Image (cartoon, one colour):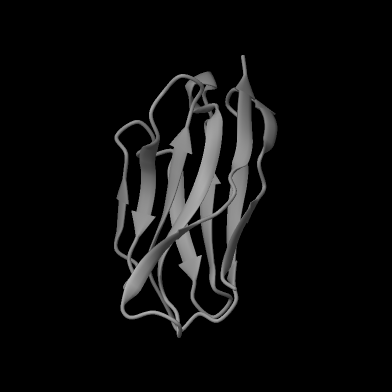
Length: 121
């Protein structure tokens, strides 16, 4: 079975920092694009940051300059460094990855269970 597990969420004051981690495990042949999404109460899920297999990155305008996405292919992990956090960053953050697995053809998107990030004023 393939799993994505996020960690690092929590409660932080505005202006503080958090580092989210996402670990992929199971029968994974290849990790392609990996990304972080978030969903705040009453709002739609949005893409926060993405990173390709060649480490090309893209960010939502709302987090650009404050967040940094990175990956470690050897460890099968993706990270999100979150600096200068604002109350509006409060959301459940989800890890997503396009994975190639032995039991199906091509790549398929997988999702983690989510981790809560709460930023207080």
